[in-house]
Image (cartoon, rainbow, N blue to C red; front, side):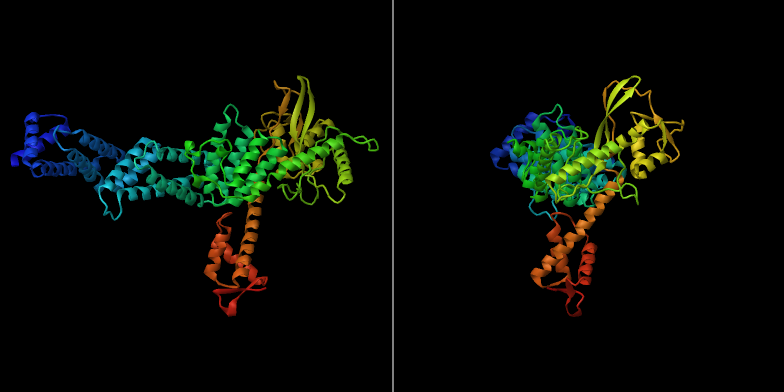
Length: 617
């Protein structure tokens, strides 16, 4: 018996080392004999598996001298090698058992090395093949027993969730790289989708459910580490894509790209913030004519409002792109309401046509090139703006412009006498014809830029202070306007001194740049108004916070009106549930709103009990 065991040990060691010193044919005959005599298990299988256990127990000690990924490679190689070790008359179950023993001995003592360190390295290097190898390996080890306290698969899943939370948190809190936040999140998400593809995983259905849920949970927790900003950046990314359009890509490719971005939106707890920034960006795209396609705009709104997918709109299977039902968005009527914006533009166009074609009894129009968009204040996030405090005006326009706008206002009153127009010049644009020695140019500029440029028809040189006095533009609007005209790529104005730098001082003087040249006849000067300024973003966040306070108070009143009396913690929980589809409130904010409602006598503490509230009818 001992001779058989020694022979098996020597033979298996030789096979694992790639050499052979044992007479293999004679050993095979011996195995067949044990089968014939009915003693295969005690004479062959049990000794062989025992020696396999000893061998890989020693091999596992090599973990200390290898990196986590190198040790993963050793485990995978040993598993495959053990499957290939076969002596013609071994029973199949013996080979299967030896392969599993190899994994158990190599994996279980070093589960944290593999499930944590190797996983972290794999995700960092974006190597989906190693991820699949690690996942399938631990799944096999887990299936070898039903009595785990914490199975290797559960351990991997836990580390996977924690690792993704950490990575998403790092991305969204990296304030220096906000501009690339969405691209980095998309790249990480697409890598994870590839790892979890049905093409690779052994246990597709179970793993898909677990890891899809873990990925969603990790992204949600990571997004929650920074309020509002991730939602803002996702809205900006969509804005950029809608401005660019599909270019050379097909409709299907464009929809896939858009759907992936919208999938990120689902992870944000700040749905209300996303709506705010999305609507602001949509407004500017429509008013400035920067949207690549109105049809695409409407389809995206349909996606956001009707719990569907862009891919469904084109009858393309979601499964093809790894997009599943839990990636779809909850119904949000606010996006459906935004379709009214397109209707406003149609009505506004009809009004403009009527204005440009006056009836016989109406006077001639001072400027038939005038284009006005009349918008409902309740539907468009466009507010009256006063650029310079204490002036009461946004900007002092050239007299001919003022005349044309006043004429349109008079016309509008004849159609809608009970309505009042409020101008939003910061969203206005103008087309100017400019004459240079090098040739005539057509300049597409903002209304602010046009107002500044037209000053140089009156005289050759103006100081910053003089321009400010003449236009009533405040510093926050005037400085970027001058920078775009004199210190940008297309320099229509010239600073008279040779000072280096783009900062603008009050005593700086500017003149018309007659030496300006450009190969194009039609030139668009980049305008600061096309993108949100820091001031506008801060104002948007302030509005979001104000709306949240109002939503919390409304939710508290509804809950208390229905319940009449309620304990503090229950009220907090139900308030959170009531607004959670729109944002995730801070508990302190809820407490503050409760105190405010008590002061205004909407609710009261019941019988002096600080922990119980009653509704005051």
